[in-house]
Image (cartoon, rainbow, N blue to C red; front, side, top):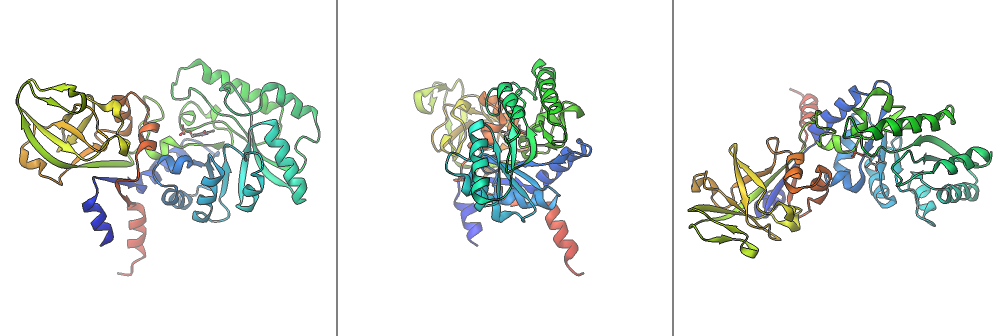
Length: 380
Ligand SMILES: *Cc1c(COP(=O)(O)O)cnc(C)c1O
């Protein structure tokens, strides 16, 4: 009942297809041989809801999960069984080490300082603590530099009290198959790994999985591809998100009339304008002004005028006005207009489109695989 009311009151409906996330996870796993496939759930699973996504991936066999911040890990912990490991990409900020151990989180240690603090924390607790150590292979963002790696290998007590789960690094250009930095980072990472015999290793994000098996090592770390973002120009994933905006009203305007803030759209003919109740405050980026599209019954209608905070306007002249009665739905993200296509219209990447989508939408989840499982379990 409540669910229905929220659906009818909201300005838009966001449907998240957990079955598609399952399918994407299976596809990724089928590409990595005997390596393990983790899942990156930072920023609330790229905006899609980590508490809903995590159990589904666990059911698919995923046991390694990555978040960016400790607080994300604390929220995620009760959604997963204890044999699932949660890794915190940013490690513990100074003084927050105990929060990791209290909540069963494993830090990625990115600097000498984080390693020293984790070592000291292990000593205080009098037990061995797990960690991943990140090394920089060319992105210059996080992880030990080559000199710091030398310092590590010269110091037999460097990891006292630390059980090294794996050494990891991150690729900067893996979405571009021919980018020379890929091979360069791989060579650097292989050289580092040769100095750390027997230590498991992890390099590939979603895009890295599709470069070549050389990039897979022991653990891959996909995020975007799970959520339907294409890992490169050739590889498609199943579409996970559908965003349907609601029509507020329609009107007919004449040649010479203007639309929206700044009057930035000038009608050149009689035009049917449809106003839809989604705006930049919902994450429909303002850079979509005069360039966005919606899809109605397979017909693309252009966004005209600037994106307002709570509404957008479309040239719906190609449609019958009855099709756009108040409350009817137009597709903003759907299989015919993927997250990547929207991103390209907005001049950004799919990651930003997904993580921009706000809580104001009515959200619903569907999971065909789980429904099947439930149906299977129901006695005839
Ligand atoms: C975000 C992130 C990932 C996941 O990257 P995708 O491109 O979304 O697959 C993997 N590793 C690290 C270190 C990250 O920050």
